[in-house]
Structure formats: C-alpha cells, structure tokens
Image (cartoon, rainbow, N blue to C red; front, side):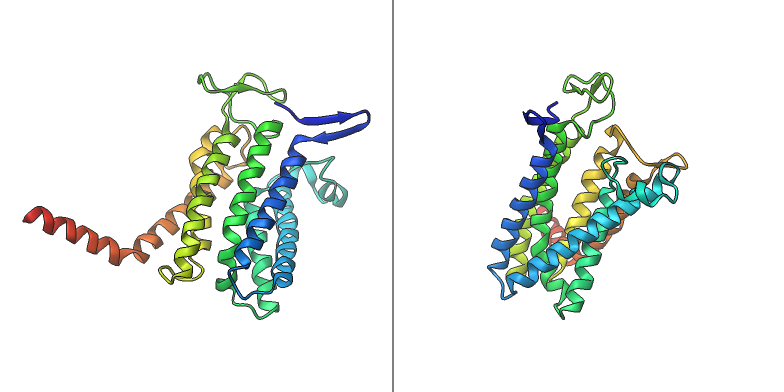
Length: 262
C-alpha cells in the first residue's frame, strides 16, 4: 500500500503515523463534545484520558511481550525499544486503558459508571481511524486468499484479505450505535455503565468474526489467544444482555404470539 505518505529528503512522514495523529485528535474532539453535555470538569476528564492512554501503551506492550517471550526474554531494552522490536496487543491496550481510567476515577472520587460511557464512542472512533490507517499503510494484512476482493502488500506474499479495512468499517458502525446508546443512557432508558458492556461486546464481535482471516495471530497450544478471549467475552456478554433485556424480549414475544392467535 502506501507506508510513506510524504518524503522530503531525509524527512519521511509515515501514513500510519498520520492516521494515529488523526485518530487521537478526532477522538479528543469527540470526547470534548460529549463532556460539554455533562457537569464534569474538562481538565479532569482529559487528565483521565492521558493517564488511560499511558496505561494502554504499557499494558498493551506487556501483553505482547508476554505472549512473545521467546523474542524478548528479560531484556529491558528490547521491551522498551518499540521501533527496533515492534509489537503491541490491542486487547492488552484496551484492558490497560479502562483499568487505568478506573483507578484515576477512584483517585478523583468520580463515579466510574457515570464517566466511562462518555469515553466509549471516542475510543471506538479512534480505533476505527487507526485500523483504516493500518490498511492504507499496509502495517496489518489479512491472510493469503484467492478471493476476488483482495490486494497485494509489499510486506507479504500473494494476495491478501482486506482484514483491517473490514475491521475499520465495523468499528465505524459500532461508533454509530454507541452514540445512540449514549443518549439512551442520558434519557435513563439504559443504565449508566451499559456502554462499557457494549464496547467489549462489539469489539469482541469484530475481532472474533475476522480472526480467521488475519495475517498474524498469537497462537498458544494451537489456538488463537485473542480469538479465544474474544469468544469468551462475546458469549458472556451476549448471555448477560439477554438477561438484561429479558423483560422487553418476553413482552415482545408474547405480544407477537397474541396477535397471531387473534
């Protein structure tokens, strides 16, 4: 694809880096717009954002090192030198982000369930833009395929699935639903904190549905580590949501049955 967007002599502007910057600033703007609807202090919210991002970077990197320990060992330099020894776990980053945000909220005596909902749509937007950048830059590729809708990448042999593009489109769709859910929460139609469940459910769905066409997967004992993790989260949250919405589902089913009986 296009790993280098612009080049001026020794100065190179990388496509993926540009998209990461765009993802960061669009997510920040979206979060700022959300916070305008609340009584939260902007400086506190953005302090929480930067703390959470630090957590995402640290935990995401440590997850990758743990599952690729044979490549890193106990070398501190290999762990911190990301340029020389690249690798980052998306699921590790997600877990780190929300754990660090939780402890930040606790330290500022902010109710976690009240604030976390406003972070979800911006985080999904940032992930969607980041995945789009990964596609255009060619830093992530799908598995090899003869499917007509495929491309060749400089970093891999043969034609490949457009996996990061599919992920990006699905995440943009998740942003749309998350935005609608946020306003349902503000109208007290759904309980506070529900968007956090939706986030993990939707990301698990996206990851699991495309795991089989990824170019690179973390394999442990013959199984995809993050595929299994996504499947477990998706199944657990699906069962919980069925239980959560059992009243409306039951009423709707009974209503349809009564209409057919008339």
